[in-house]
Image (tube, rainbow, N blue to C red):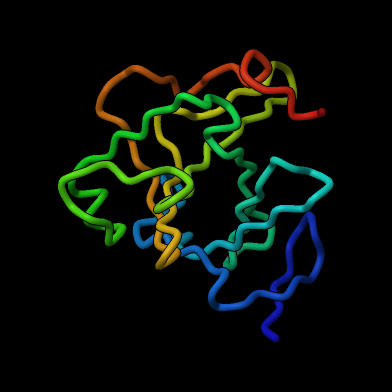
Length: 152
């Protein structure tokens, strides 16, 4: 079994079928193209996106529907194509794609989540992209505590 070393979870098994591929990386982390989603039961609904290249790089995320059950995913045709999804319609969260909001927890301040640019993962081929919305319905600094209680 292939192993990866992580900062927060120590050594872990990493199966090829579990790897999430971000061909273009994330903004400011373009070199980071392969991640493992770690979802410890005791931390649910939190999901940790662990870089396979840098053991110290791990993004804390939440499923977007946990934050906003009425969230409407709007992706550009180019983003839909890059994920290998059916053109001409928006993908369904939970059926075709997983949609994660990156959480920011500053030392001094309240945590926020990025609803403007969620990480969208094709459930079939595990290809992902940070889908930046062209509208401004959602914020990249949505207050977390007004949406969900992650401690319950």
